Length: 97
Image (cartoon, rainbow, N blue to C red; front, side):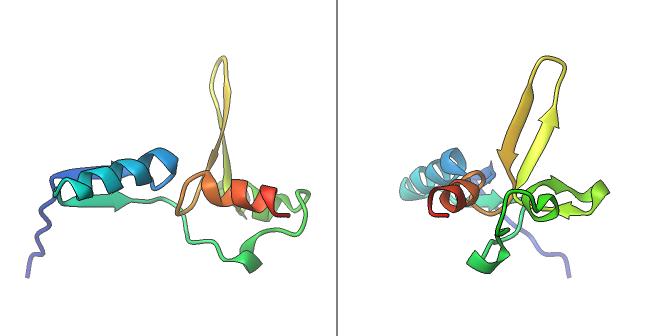
């Protein structure tokens, strides 16, 4: 049996921008799907220290499954969040540590 999904909008990422966009679109009556790359973080999942790189950075090739992804470009390095909520869970962790 083939499953069918019908959405008016698909939002990539549930971070600050994605969550607000999805909320506003759904408030206007649109059917919205939100796709997320990362996992849900619980308080015990966060590393106790920034030096625990395997739980701090996202680099599966090096068996690191944290919540920060570092993307290297020619003229810029971009640090972004990986997980449900995008950058917010990592910011929340840093603020209340």
